[in-house]
Image 1: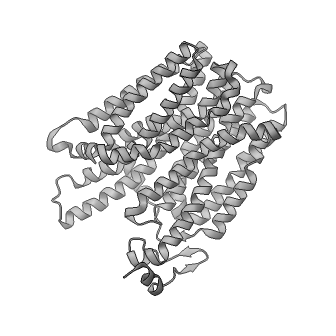
Image 2: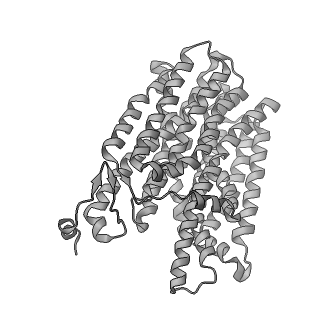
Image 3: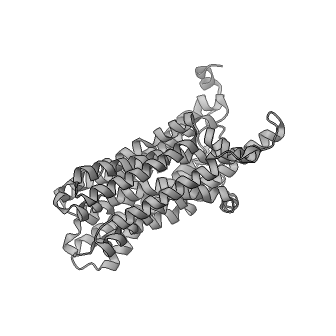
Length: 456
Protein backbone atom coordinates (compact mmCIF):
# COMPACT_ATOMS: atom_id res chain seq x y z
CA UNK A 1 0.00 0.00 0.00
CA UNK A 2 1.37 3.42 -0.92
CA UNK A 3 1.48 6.36 1.46
CA UNK A 4 -1.29 8.05 -0.53
CA UNK A 5 -3.54 5.00 -0.29
CA UNK A 6 -2.81 4.71 3.40
CA UNK A 7 -3.81 8.31 3.92
CA UNK A 8 -7.15 7.62 2.28
CA UNK A 9 -7.95 4.47 4.26
CA UNK A 10 -6.49 4.98 7.72
CA UNK A 11 -8.73 6.58 10.37
CA UNK A 12 -7.99 9.97 11.82
CA UNK A 13 -6.23 10.07 15.16
CA UNK A 14 -8.94 10.10 17.84
CA UNK A 15 -8.62 13.03 20.25
CA UNK A 16 -10.41 14.13 23.36
CA UNK A 17 -9.24 17.33 25.00
CA UNK A 18 -5.96 17.14 23.02
CA UNK A 19 -5.37 13.60 24.35
CA UNK A 20 -4.60 10.88 21.78
CA UNK A 21 -5.77 7.45 22.84
CA UNK A 22 -4.70 5.43 19.81
CA UNK A 23 -1.06 5.99 18.93
CA UNK A 24 0.86 3.40 16.86
CA UNK A 25 3.95 5.06 15.36
CA UNK A 26 5.59 1.71 14.51
CA UNK A 27 2.61 0.78 12.32
CA UNK A 28 3.68 1.93 8.81
CA UNK A 29 0.11 2.61 7.66
CA UNK A 30 -0.74 4.62 10.75
CA UNK A 31 2.57 6.51 10.57
CA UNK A 32 2.27 7.52 6.92
CA UNK A 33 -1.40 8.44 7.15
CA UNK A 34 -1.58 10.59 10.25
CA UNK A 35 1.19 9.79 12.72
CA UNK A 36 4.03 11.51 10.87
CA UNK A 37 2.20 14.82 10.55
CA UNK A 38 1.19 14.85 14.22
CA UNK A 39 4.66 13.84 15.43
CA UNK A 40 6.43 16.50 13.37
CA UNK A 41 4.06 19.20 14.59
CA UNK A 42 4.73 18.22 18.21
CA UNK A 43 8.47 18.11 17.56
CA UNK A 44 8.49 21.63 16.09
CA UNK A 45 6.80 23.21 19.12
CA UNK A 46 8.83 21.06 21.50
CA UNK A 47 12.04 22.43 19.96
CA UNK A 48 10.78 26.01 20.35
CA UNK A 49 9.96 25.55 24.03
CA UNK A 50 13.20 23.70 24.75
CA UNK A 51 15.26 26.33 22.92
CA UNK A 52 13.77 29.02 25.14
CA UNK A 53 14.45 26.83 28.16
CA UNK A 54 18.15 26.81 27.32
CA UNK A 55 18.22 30.57 26.69
CA UNK A 56 16.72 31.39 30.09
CA UNK A 57 18.86 28.71 31.75
CA UNK A 58 22.06 30.36 30.51
CA UNK A 59 21.07 34.04 30.26
CA UNK A 60 23.09 34.89 33.39
CA UNK A 61 26.29 33.93 31.56
CA UNK A 62 25.92 37.24 29.71
CA UNK A 63 24.16 39.29 32.39
CA UNK A 64 26.93 38.50 34.90
CA UNK A 65 29.53 40.36 32.82
CA UNK A 66 27.30 43.47 32.84
CA UNK A 67 26.94 43.73 36.63
CA UNK A 68 29.98 45.95 37.18
CA UNK A 69 27.91 48.60 38.98
CA UNK A 70 27.21 46.11 41.81
CA UNK A 71 30.92 45.64 42.62
CA UNK A 72 30.65 41.87 42.96
CA UNK A 73 33.89 39.88 43.00
CA UNK A 74 34.71 37.46 40.18
CA UNK A 75 34.03 34.53 42.51
CA UNK A 76 30.62 35.99 43.40
CA UNK A 77 29.79 36.36 39.72
CA UNK A 78 30.76 32.75 39.07
CA UNK A 79 28.36 31.73 41.85
CA UNK A 80 25.59 33.59 40.02
CA UNK A 81 26.44 31.71 36.81
CA UNK A 82 26.80 28.38 38.64
CA UNK A 83 23.48 28.19 40.46
CA UNK A 84 21.23 27.86 37.38
CA UNK A 85 23.32 24.83 36.35
CA UNK A 86 22.95 23.29 39.81
CA UNK A 87 19.17 23.77 39.98
CA UNK A 88 18.58 22.82 36.36
CA UNK A 89 20.49 19.57 36.78
CA UNK A 90 18.48 18.60 39.85
CA UNK A 91 15.18 19.38 38.12
CA UNK A 92 15.94 17.03 35.21
CA UNK A 93 14.89 13.96 37.21
CA UNK A 94 11.33 15.08 38.12
CA UNK A 95 10.94 16.74 34.71
CA UNK A 96 11.67 13.39 33.04
CA UNK A 97 8.44 11.92 34.46
CA UNK A 98 6.23 14.99 34.03
CA UNK A 99 5.07 14.40 30.39
CA UNK A 100 3.79 10.91 31.19
CA UNK A 101 2.18 12.09 34.43
CA UNK A 102 0.51 15.27 33.18
CA UNK A 103 0.60 14.94 29.38
CA UNK A 104 3.36 16.15 27.06
CA UNK A 105 1.35 19.05 25.68
CA UNK A 106 0.11 20.09 29.13
CA UNK A 107 3.57 19.98 30.65
CA UNK A 108 5.14 21.88 27.76
CA UNK A 109 2.63 24.69 28.38
CA UNK A 110 3.39 24.72 32.11
CA UNK A 111 7.17 24.44 31.77
CA UNK A 112 7.19 27.22 29.15
CA UNK A 113 5.15 29.55 31.36
CA UNK A 114 7.46 28.83 34.29
CA UNK A 115 10.20 30.52 32.26
CA UNK A 116 8.44 33.81 32.94
CA UNK A 117 9.67 33.56 36.54
CA UNK A 118 13.41 33.93 35.81
CA UNK A 119 12.73 36.35 32.95
CA UNK A 120 10.68 38.80 35.01
CA UNK A 121 12.71 38.44 38.22
CA UNK A 122 15.92 39.19 36.30
CA UNK A 123 14.43 42.50 35.17
CA UNK A 124 13.31 43.28 38.73
CA UNK A 125 16.77 42.56 40.16
CA UNK A 126 18.81 44.71 37.78
CA UNK A 127 16.32 47.60 37.88
CA UNK A 128 17.11 48.24 41.55
CA UNK A 129 20.67 49.40 42.37
CA UNK A 130 20.06 48.27 45.94
CA UNK A 131 19.33 44.63 45.14
CA UNK A 132 21.45 42.57 47.58
CA UNK A 133 23.76 39.80 46.48
CA UNK A 134 21.68 37.07 48.11
CA UNK A 135 18.67 38.18 46.04
CA UNK A 136 20.74 37.85 42.86
CA UNK A 137 21.63 34.30 43.90
CA UNK A 138 18.00 33.34 44.48
CA UNK A 139 16.83 34.94 41.24
CA UNK A 140 19.64 33.34 39.23
CA UNK A 141 18.71 29.98 40.74
CA UNK A 142 15.21 30.26 39.25
CA UNK A 143 16.82 30.19 35.80
CA UNK A 144 17.39 26.51 36.53
CA UNK A 145 13.74 25.99 35.58
CA UNK A 146 14.93 26.21 31.98
CA UNK A 147 17.48 23.46 32.54
CA UNK A 148 14.80 20.91 33.38
CA UNK A 149 13.04 21.47 30.06
CA UNK A 150 15.54 19.31 28.18
CA UNK A 151 14.58 16.20 30.15
CA UNK A 152 10.82 16.61 29.78
CA UNK A 153 11.08 17.56 26.12
CA UNK A 154 13.24 14.54 25.23
CA UNK A 155 11.05 12.20 27.29
CA UNK A 156 7.92 13.48 25.55
CA UNK A 157 9.17 13.39 21.95
CA UNK A 158 10.49 9.84 22.19
CA UNK A 159 6.90 8.53 22.44
CA UNK A 160 5.80 10.24 19.22
CA UNK A 161 8.25 8.64 16.78
CA UNK A 162 8.80 5.06 15.61
CA UNK A 163 11.90 3.29 16.84
CA UNK A 164 13.80 3.71 13.57
CA UNK A 165 13.22 7.49 13.54
CA UNK A 166 13.78 8.35 17.18
CA UNK A 167 17.50 9.01 16.75
CA UNK A 168 16.97 11.75 14.19
CA UNK A 169 14.01 13.26 16.06
CA UNK A 170 15.79 13.32 19.41
CA UNK A 171 18.93 14.67 17.74
CA UNK A 172 17.00 17.59 16.28
CA UNK A 173 15.26 18.20 19.59
CA UNK A 174 18.54 18.19 21.53
CA UNK A 175 20.37 20.38 19.00
CA UNK A 176 17.50 22.88 18.94
CA UNK A 177 17.82 23.22 22.69
CA UNK A 178 21.60 23.36 22.88
CA UNK A 179 21.77 26.15 20.31
CA UNK A 180 19.77 28.24 22.77
CA UNK A 181 23.02 28.81 24.67
CA UNK A 182 24.54 30.37 21.57
CA UNK A 183 21.38 32.37 20.82
CA UNK A 184 21.32 34.06 24.19
CA UNK A 185 25.02 34.94 24.04
CA UNK A 186 24.65 36.35 20.52
CA UNK A 187 21.50 38.41 21.09
CA UNK A 188 21.78 39.63 24.68
CA UNK A 189 24.79 41.95 24.24
CA UNK A 190 22.90 43.68 21.42
CA UNK A 191 19.64 43.84 23.38
CA UNK A 192 21.35 45.12 26.53
CA UNK A 193 23.28 47.76 24.56
CA UNK A 194 20.09 49.01 22.96
CA UNK A 195 17.50 48.74 25.74
CA UNK A 196 19.30 48.28 29.05
CA UNK A 197 20.11 45.36 31.34
CA UNK A 198 16.48 44.68 32.32
CA UNK A 199 15.73 43.85 28.70
CA UNK A 200 17.84 40.69 29.07
CA UNK A 201 14.86 39.25 30.92
CA UNK A 202 11.90 41.08 29.42
CA UNK A 203 13.04 40.38 25.85
CA UNK A 204 12.06 36.73 26.24
CA UNK A 205 8.57 37.28 27.67
CA UNK A 206 6.67 37.49 24.33
CA UNK A 207 8.58 34.48 22.98
CA UNK A 208 7.76 32.45 26.09
CA UNK A 209 4.08 33.37 25.78
CA UNK A 210 4.14 32.44 22.08
CA UNK A 211 5.75 29.07 22.88
CA UNK A 212 3.16 28.34 25.57
CA UNK A 213 0.33 29.30 23.21
CA UNK A 214 1.80 27.19 20.42
CA UNK A 215 2.06 24.19 22.72
CA UNK A 216 -1.51 24.73 23.98
CA UNK A 217 -3.07 24.92 20.53
CA UNK A 218 -0.79 22.67 18.47
CA UNK A 219 0.63 19.92 20.67
CA UNK A 220 -0.94 16.71 21.95
CA UNK A 221 -0.90 14.44 24.98
CA UNK A 222 -0.45 10.68 24.56
CA UNK A 223 -2.23 8.24 26.84
CA UNK A 224 0.38 5.63 25.83
CA UNK A 225 3.21 7.57 27.51
CA UNK A 226 4.27 5.78 30.66
CA UNK A 227 6.26 7.06 33.61
CA UNK A 228 8.64 4.49 35.09
CA UNK A 229 10.24 5.94 38.24
CA UNK A 230 10.97 2.41 39.46
CA UNK A 231 13.01 1.73 36.32
CA UNK A 232 15.09 4.85 36.93
CA UNK A 233 15.59 3.81 40.55
CA UNK A 234 16.85 0.43 39.31
CA UNK A 235 19.12 2.17 36.83
CA UNK A 236 20.64 4.20 39.67
CA UNK A 237 21.75 0.94 41.27
CA UNK A 238 23.71 -0.27 38.24
CA UNK A 239 27.46 0.27 37.93
CA UNK A 240 27.19 1.03 34.19
CA UNK A 241 24.84 3.92 34.93
CA UNK A 242 27.32 5.56 37.27
CA UNK A 243 30.29 4.97 34.98
CA UNK A 244 28.46 6.64 32.11
CA UNK A 245 27.30 9.44 34.43
CA UNK A 246 30.94 10.26 35.17
CA UNK A 247 31.76 10.27 31.45
CA UNK A 248 28.72 12.45 30.72
CA UNK A 249 29.86 14.94 33.35
CA UNK A 250 33.06 15.16 31.33
CA UNK A 251 31.23 15.75 28.04
CA UNK A 252 27.84 17.42 28.38
CA UNK A 253 28.76 18.89 31.77
CA UNK A 254 31.86 20.38 30.16
CA UNK A 255 29.86 21.76 27.24
CA UNK A 256 27.33 23.60 29.40
CA UNK A 257 29.98 24.62 31.95
CA UNK A 258 32.48 26.06 29.49
CA UNK A 259 29.73 27.68 27.43
CA UNK A 260 28.36 29.58 30.42
CA UNK A 261 31.79 30.40 31.86
CA UNK A 262 33.29 31.69 28.59
CA UNK A 263 32.05 35.33 28.71
CA UNK A 264 32.98 35.85 32.35
CA UNK A 265 36.33 34.17 31.85
CA UNK A 266 37.16 36.55 28.99
CA UNK A 267 36.22 39.58 31.05
CA UNK A 268 38.06 38.52 34.22
CA UNK A 269 41.25 37.12 32.66
CA UNK A 270 41.55 39.39 29.61
CA UNK A 271 39.93 42.67 30.72
CA UNK A 272 41.61 44.52 27.87
CA UNK A 273 39.51 42.39 25.50
CA UNK A 274 36.26 42.57 27.51
CA UNK A 275 34.42 43.98 24.49
CA UNK A 276 34.99 40.65 22.73
CA UNK A 277 32.68 38.82 25.12
CA UNK A 278 30.15 39.40 22.32
CA UNK A 279 32.00 36.65 20.41
CA UNK A 280 31.50 34.09 23.18
CA UNK A 281 28.40 32.75 21.41
CA UNK A 282 30.68 31.02 18.90
CA UNK A 283 31.74 28.49 21.54
CA UNK A 284 28.33 26.97 22.30
CA UNK A 285 27.36 27.30 18.64
CA UNK A 286 30.31 25.12 17.61
CA UNK A 287 29.69 22.71 20.48
CA UNK A 288 26.02 22.35 19.53
CA UNK A 289 26.53 21.93 15.78
CA UNK A 290 29.36 19.43 16.18
CA UNK A 291 27.43 17.18 18.58
CA UNK A 292 25.91 15.10 15.72
CA UNK A 293 29.45 14.53 14.42
CA UNK A 294 30.21 12.66 17.64
CA UNK A 295 27.22 10.40 17.01
CA UNK A 296 28.13 9.95 13.34
CA UNK A 297 31.70 8.98 14.16
CA UNK A 298 30.45 6.59 16.83
CA UNK A 299 28.24 4.82 14.32
CA UNK A 300 31.32 4.12 12.21
CA UNK A 301 34.19 3.78 14.68
CA UNK A 302 32.46 2.77 17.91
CA UNK A 303 31.15 4.97 20.70
CA UNK A 304 33.82 3.98 23.21
CA UNK A 305 36.66 4.49 20.71
CA UNK A 306 35.47 8.01 19.86
CA UNK A 307 34.93 8.85 23.53
CA UNK A 308 38.34 7.45 24.50
CA UNK A 309 40.32 9.51 22.00
CA UNK A 310 38.08 12.54 22.48
CA UNK A 311 39.01 12.70 26.18
CA UNK A 312 42.65 12.71 25.08
CA UNK A 313 41.82 15.67 22.83
CA UNK A 314 40.05 17.42 25.72
CA UNK A 315 43.15 17.02 27.91
CA UNK A 316 45.29 18.56 25.17
CA UNK A 317 42.76 21.38 24.71
CA UNK A 318 42.72 22.23 28.42
CA UNK A 319 46.52 22.33 28.52
CA UNK A 320 46.52 24.60 25.46
CA UNK A 321 44.06 26.96 27.17
CA UNK A 322 46.31 26.94 30.23
CA UNK A 323 49.36 27.80 28.13
CA UNK A 324 47.51 30.62 26.36
CA UNK A 325 46.38 32.15 29.65
CA UNK A 326 49.86 31.90 31.12
CA UNK A 327 51.29 33.63 28.05
CA UNK A 328 48.52 36.26 28.07
CA UNK A 329 47.84 35.37 24.42
CA UNK A 330 44.18 36.13 23.80
CA UNK A 331 44.08 34.85 20.21
CA UNK A 332 45.49 31.48 21.26
CA UNK A 333 43.18 31.42 24.30
CA UNK A 334 40.09 32.03 22.20
CA UNK A 335 41.06 29.40 19.62
CA UNK A 336 41.98 26.85 22.30
CA UNK A 337 38.76 27.45 24.22
CA UNK A 338 36.74 27.00 21.04
CA UNK A 339 38.56 23.70 20.50
CA UNK A 340 37.80 22.69 24.08
CA UNK A 341 34.07 23.36 23.73
CA UNK A 342 34.09 21.65 20.33
CA UNK A 343 35.65 18.47 21.71
CA UNK A 344 33.12 18.54 24.56
CA UNK A 345 30.40 18.63 21.89
CA UNK A 346 31.87 15.63 20.06
CA UNK A 347 32.06 13.69 23.32
CA UNK A 348 28.51 14.71 24.10
CA UNK A 349 27.35 12.87 21.00
CA UNK A 350 29.61 9.83 21.44
CA UNK A 351 28.79 9.17 25.11
CA UNK A 352 25.06 9.49 24.41
CA UNK A 353 25.53 6.92 21.65
CA UNK A 354 27.31 4.51 24.01
CA UNK A 355 24.46 4.22 26.52
CA UNK A 356 21.96 2.13 24.49
CA UNK A 357 24.79 -0.02 23.09
CA UNK A 358 26.06 -0.87 26.57
CA UNK A 359 22.68 -1.82 28.01
CA UNK A 360 21.66 -3.74 24.91
CA UNK A 361 24.88 -5.75 24.95
CA UNK A 362 24.56 -6.42 28.66
CA UNK A 363 20.97 -7.62 28.28
CA UNK A 364 21.66 -10.07 25.41
CA UNK A 365 24.98 -11.42 26.72
CA UNK A 366 24.80 -15.23 26.61
CA UNK A 367 21.38 -15.31 24.90
CA UNK A 368 21.06 -17.14 21.57
CA UNK A 369 20.24 -14.69 18.72
CA UNK A 370 17.01 -15.29 16.81
CA UNK A 371 15.19 -16.84 19.76
CA UNK A 372 12.17 -15.41 21.63
CA UNK A 373 14.43 -15.02 24.66
CA UNK A 374 16.76 -12.85 22.58
CA UNK A 375 13.92 -10.57 21.50
CA UNK A 376 12.79 -10.29 25.10
CA UNK A 377 16.34 -9.47 26.15
CA UNK A 378 16.53 -6.73 23.52
CA UNK A 379 13.33 -5.18 24.90
CA UNK A 380 14.78 -5.33 28.39
CA UNK A 381 17.97 -3.64 27.21
CA UNK A 382 16.00 -0.86 25.56
CA UNK A 383 13.95 -0.28 28.71
CA UNK A 384 17.07 -0.27 30.90
CA UNK A 385 18.83 2.16 28.56
CA UNK A 386 15.85 4.52 28.51
CA UNK A 387 15.75 4.66 32.30
CA UNK A 388 19.52 5.09 32.53
CA UNK A 389 19.57 7.95 30.01
CA UNK A 390 17.21 10.01 32.18
CA UNK A 391 19.42 9.52 35.22
CA UNK A 392 22.71 10.03 33.35
CA UNK A 393 21.52 13.25 31.69
CA UNK A 394 20.63 14.67 35.10
CA UNK A 395 23.91 13.72 36.80
CA UNK A 396 25.99 14.76 33.79
CA UNK A 397 24.53 18.26 33.78
CA UNK A 398 26.01 18.88 37.25
CA UNK A 399 29.33 19.28 35.44
CA UNK A 400 28.20 22.75 34.43
CA UNK A 401 28.07 23.71 38.12
CA UNK A 402 31.45 22.18 38.96
CA UNK A 403 33.25 23.90 36.10
CA UNK A 404 31.95 27.36 36.98
CA UNK A 405 32.70 26.85 40.65
CA UNK A 406 36.14 25.56 39.74
CA UNK A 407 36.92 28.75 37.84
CA UNK A 408 35.46 30.94 40.57
CA UNK A 409 37.36 29.22 43.39
CA UNK A 410 40.62 29.13 41.45
CA UNK A 411 40.50 32.83 40.58
CA UNK A 412 39.54 33.74 44.15
CA UNK A 413 42.38 31.71 45.68
CA UNK A 414 45.18 32.25 43.18
CA UNK A 415 44.13 35.14 40.96
CA UNK A 416 44.04 32.92 37.88
CA UNK A 417 42.28 29.92 36.38
CA UNK A 418 45.34 27.63 36.27
CA UNK A 419 44.33 25.52 39.29
CA UNK A 420 40.88 24.91 37.84
CA UNK A 421 42.30 23.93 34.45
CA UNK A 422 44.72 21.52 36.12
CA UNK A 423 41.81 19.90 37.97
CA UNK A 424 39.78 19.62 34.76
CA UNK A 425 42.70 17.99 32.93
CA UNK A 426 43.10 15.50 35.79
CA UNK A 427 39.39 14.67 35.64
CA UNK A 428 39.54 14.08 31.88
CA UNK A 429 42.52 11.80 32.49
CA UNK A 430 40.34 9.79 34.89
CA UNK A 431 37.59 9.64 32.25
CA UNK A 432 40.17 8.58 29.65
CA UNK A 433 41.37 5.73 31.89
CA UNK A 434 37.83 4.77 32.88
CA UNK A 435 36.76 4.51 29.24
CA UNK A 436 39.72 2.27 28.46
CA UNK A 437 39.32 0.08 31.54
CA UNK A 438 35.55 -0.42 31.23
CA UNK A 439 34.94 -0.36 27.47
CA UNK A 440 38.15 -0.63 25.45
CA UNK A 441 40.26 -3.47 26.83
CA UNK A 442 39.65 -7.07 25.77
CA UNK A 443 38.47 -9.25 28.63
CA UNK A 444 37.23 -12.29 26.76
CA UNK A 445 33.67 -13.54 26.73
CA UNK A 446 32.73 -11.76 29.94
CA UNK A 447 33.35 -8.36 28.34
CA UNK A 448 30.44 -8.47 25.89
CA UNK A 449 28.98 -5.14 27.09
CA UNK A 450 32.38 -3.48 26.78
CA UNK A 451 33.08 -4.81 23.32
CA UNK A 452 29.61 -3.96 22.06
CA UNK A 453 29.91 -0.41 23.34
CA UNK A 454 33.27 -0.05 21.69
CA UNK A 455 32.20 -1.38 18.32
CA UNK A 456 28.58 -0.38 17.89
